[in-house]
Amino acid sequence: MTNRLRSADKRLERPHPVLTTGRFRLHAWSADDLPLLVALHSDPEVQRYLAARDAPWSEHVLRARLDRFIADYAEYGWTKFKVLDAGGEFVGRAGFSRYEPTGELELGYSLMRSRWGQGMATELAQALIEWIYPVAKVGHVIGFTDVDNSASRRVLEKAGMVLTGVNKADGHMMAFYRHDPTD
Image (tube, rainbow, N blue to C red; front, top):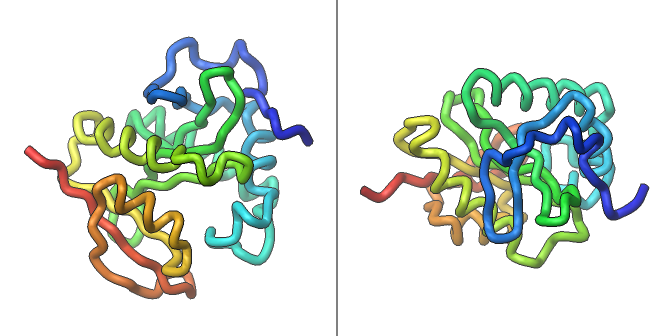
């Protein structure tokens, strides 16, 4: 599969992004976007610190996640969005989901490995944190990552999140962060 993935069908891409940054456009997903998620999550390095570290997620799992992303956006106005660069190339996913154990909104992102180390996750995290408060009317958001994922920890810290603790979750030690808006 090529490194230059584009949205499955330009006619299905929303004409206006939900959010834009200096380099990116964040769009709601369409049902035809499954190949984009498969390409992203078939890379073992992308999966390295995610829940299923030992194997890529199956198409069945990714279809369920895609359906959840679509349903969350329809119901709440937020989700983990499809991220495209200015040329329409698929970069990854970034946004929010509900953290089931606490009900809090959790910031999350996964980018194509070819995009790592370019400040893209930080740009997305900062923009999403600024964007979410008026949309979701929440008092704070959280983020977490494997304690050994120093790159993701730096992203969360650069986005203004504060470490609240290290706890075991899904069988792994995770660093938990929180962001409270400034008035």
